[in-house]
Length: 131
Image (tube, rainbow, N blue to C red):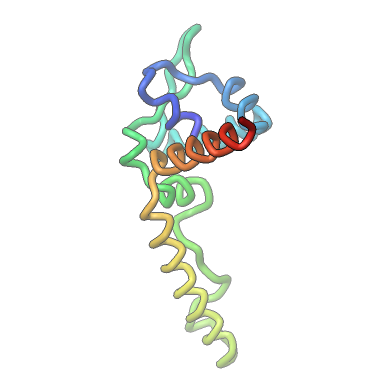
């Protein structure tokens, strides 16, 4: 979301900036950004003013793409239907598949732009509450 929020500025964000803003350890953030770069969702810029930028517009990157890149392509149970040793295992596998499809549908519906806008709206509500 930090990269999405700064998308229009065309200035890359450094790891330490993002880490400080989001309270994420630098090393962990480095790993996340490396994975996102390998998937083509972010790009890095070298140099004194280097850092990370989104590789595409934030309204073209879905939350599903980000999660799939970081966590893997699909939510899958430990065993396949053919490996289920019982009728109960098959039933659980079927429900897990349905849950995975539902989760993917929701995550595909939202983009990084949507998340940034939701965050901004909440910030505005917090500000108004304190006035």
